[in-house]
Image (cartoon, rainbow, N blue to C red; front, side):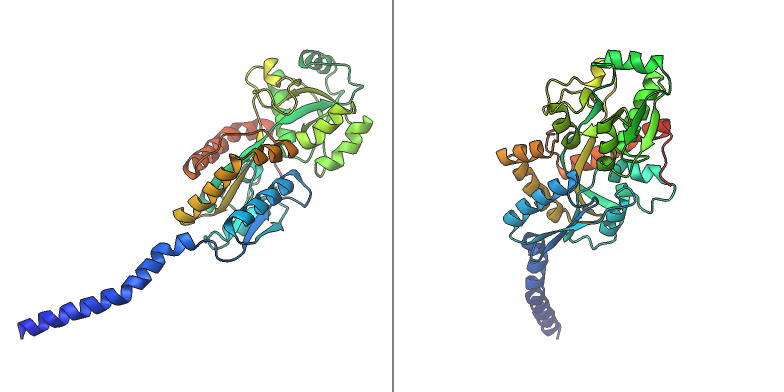
Length: 331
């Protein structure tokens, strides 16, 4: 009887293993099957913006390498957090991704009293795509041609000069407020709804200056419609080597934006690695350097998902005192 029972148990175990083996193999192979349907890439900016242009180029590349459609979904609003919330609420299966920026991961959540999202907990950082340098640009009529002269001119006439930003709490706004605070200057803030809407007044001289990303600054600097005093990053820009960093005159001043790649929290590591590897491969190509130049972005070293997560956490901490010092809110 005991022998029969032993034989029966062995038979049942064999049957169970036979039934489970295909399921187990399928479960183990599932990440390698990714993707097997279209991917949605959320861009938290309107069509035609710098982030949108970069996002569409990345989507085209991923579509070609992953052999699945990558569909852009523009969800602008709430300082990019509208799109971030959409992604955070999606299943963490790798089929809903996004192109976040420093505003998404560091600024927006700290500028709002009720952001409705904690990017450090609700999103999975995957990669960094590049950095955005900002050019302190003035109307040609401004009576200064370098940062030392700019400081002297502004200091002699407190409150006389004005600066444009793409909105309260934007990097353009915070960068200038930090510079003002560090140098104890008075410059009037004129917020606009986006950088494009401020350009008309800046080019006509209705406002005196602004921090602008390279897509807006460089063409107008080259044409003589604007003059660049310096850049926000301490490292000299590869976009216009003739423009010095503000840090050469104002030690310690070093601020920039950045664009990344992310998904919902809880994504399987194998899928995260698949996406990160595809982006890293793209970043090593000559075509990617051309893409960054077209988007007027500074190249940055590729980061692994773990490194990107640490970078995002450090950026969040670094921006906390800067936001408080600027006094900016967007509620």
